[in-house]
Image (cartoon, rainbow, N blue to C red; front, side, top):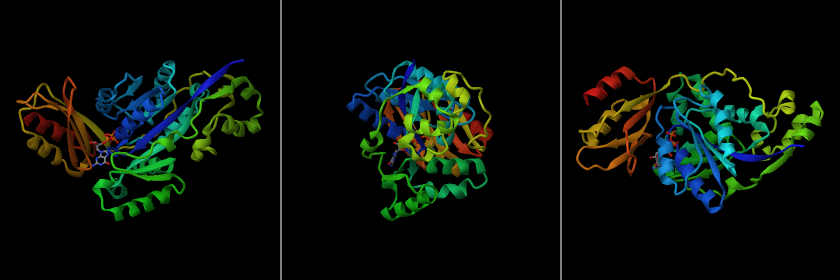
Amino acid sequence: MQTFEKVPVIILSGFLGSGKTTLLLRMLEETAKRQLRPGILMNEIGQRDVDGEWVTRSSAEVIPMEKLLDGCICCTKKSEIQGAIRKLLDTKPDLLLLELTGVANPEEIVDQLTEPGLITRVYLHRVITLIDAEHALEYNSIFASDKQLVRTLRGQISTADELIINKTDLVPPTHNGRVTEMLRKYNPDGRIHYAVKANVSLAPFFQGMRMIRQNVQSLAQVSTASRSAHIESTAGFTANTKYRASYRISPTAISQPVATPAPRESAASFSRIATICLPLTGPLTVSISKLEHFIKKWGSSLLRAKGYVQFAGPTQTHMLQYSGKRFVWEPSSFGGPFYIVFIGFQLDEQAILEEWYLL
Ligand SMILES: Nc1nc2c(ncn2[C@@H]2O[C@H](COP(=O)(O)OP(=O)(O)OP(=O)(O)O)[C@@H](O)[C@H]2O)c(=O)[nH]1
């Protein structure tokens, strides 16, 4: 008789720049305090691993981390998610933290966790979605022409157990009420938190977390009619109420718990979002203000920029973060090669690259 330890999974979701990595860093402090060993899966829509570098450099300990770059694990990278999670499980973590891209629909990831190769090994503990208080109300109109993206943004809200309205330092207090109202339209039950720098009490996110030993053979003996109820009560999905009704498992999955499923086709969770990597062969000879001017000139089509830059003169490396039309520059020990990634909506790639090389 075979038994499996099921590892809790926490999904961090939210639009580009909403604060997912900021929360992940807080979660890592909390897991260290609780003496829990996390495994991290990070997914970047761009080719470069800005957030992974940031997390690695900010963590005192080496944390098992898998990175899926240049695509989104809810669509273009979907077939790779199972392999990445299995590799993390080999490190025997106490929990898994999955940071999605800003344009991922968590519903698709949740679905992946119930595939035969993972259903017996992990359970969904929480979906946490970060909301950018300053910009969340604009998205419907900005992205009106991209139906997939609008659906994805709603999915990020409706799927969440915990909704963190972040960046509240950038809006007047009355604005939070309007954001809350919008969230309630798509998610009447999720718990809402208000935060600056994702600074919320993390204890509720760990509540009810447990390792579950499940007897796979006894699961196989359950009659087809009662399977979904049995899975719900044994597989630990109780925390995530959104999925109680929709979680599914096929009879094949039960008799062959480690089978690898064929990747399924799915529509992209966004259609007009593109990424451009601007490489740097050495220190930039232009000033910070000239670089900021270059970044800002692409207007609202540039949703996010991030990367590592060194300027000629002082040799200090900087991590660049541009989100919500705001710049944050932080000193970094990143050793290069340096680059900047642009993520945008209907970006004119050719024009950007031409101007970049002339900068
Ligand atoms: N002013 C302000 N800035 C914040 C807050 N939370 C995060 N930031 C900054 O916003 C920028 C983006 O934060 P991230 O945590 O990287 O956001 P993200 O959701 O992981 O971004 P992507 O993964 O690129 O989608 C960083 O410069 C953060 O320091 C906040 O509450 N207020």
